[in-house]
Image (cartoon, rainbow, N blue to C red; front, side):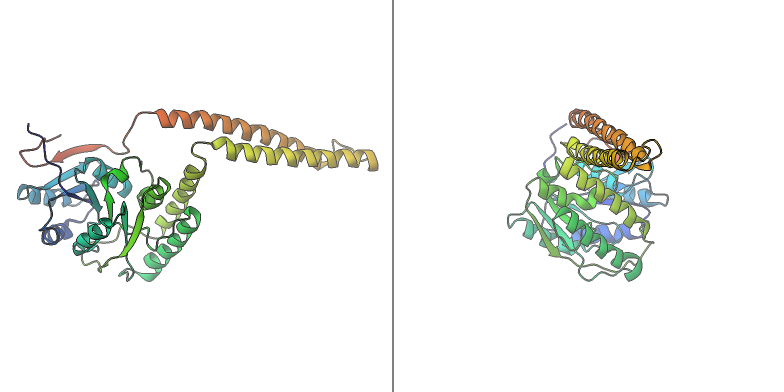
Length: 324
């Protein structure tokens, strides 16, 4: 088999029950990228409607398109992770399958990327979503992410972004962490820019996300902060907590001893004595947790690269390899 040429651009689209929007979206992408050497990579994230059948029909008529199908629904982050891994382009553009991202913005993102940036993040300045269940929680989440990560973007949740492929090589995605890629990349020294993009109202299907997703984002944000600050030195945080517990235990013990000497109070009936013992035990446990975490971190960084998804099938043109 001859070596497949690397396209200039890969468009990665996670799909979950978006059968009605796929054909119009694919046509729009073709019009917007007519002047580019590109491929489109759809990742069917375990759709229960006929999304995969629609994609398979489109693929039969399209040379520069591939479809990856998951065995079940693994989530948007896993779908994007698979898309990034199998994308061949020098530039990778993820976007939603619901038609709310405008393919006409892709050339603009690429032009901005070519100004010397590694990542250009879309900003849905005029969102066409429900203000209570989508827009307001998103703004709160963006503010929180900016405060904790120190990297302020208006719209972390916008899927439409432009990445240089090499910027994604060292990033591993879990949970809902695809939205934190700009922050992770900036911590790695990449140059990140933001650009206003068009956001269109949904015309088909139903949104897959609600207020519950905000809580998941908060939990992932805590993980991100820990990984950024202590992923290679967990003993610093656990050991620090251990030292604080030890100091509190020491002060509590001194207080109990002082009460015994100067007031004649019984030590074994003094609640401060039990608190002192509990804090001492906690300090020892925190230090031990830190040591265990240090060993786990070393194992983690040296472990094998294991994906967070299971692929059932990949369909592509006859000139390319088919994996089943």
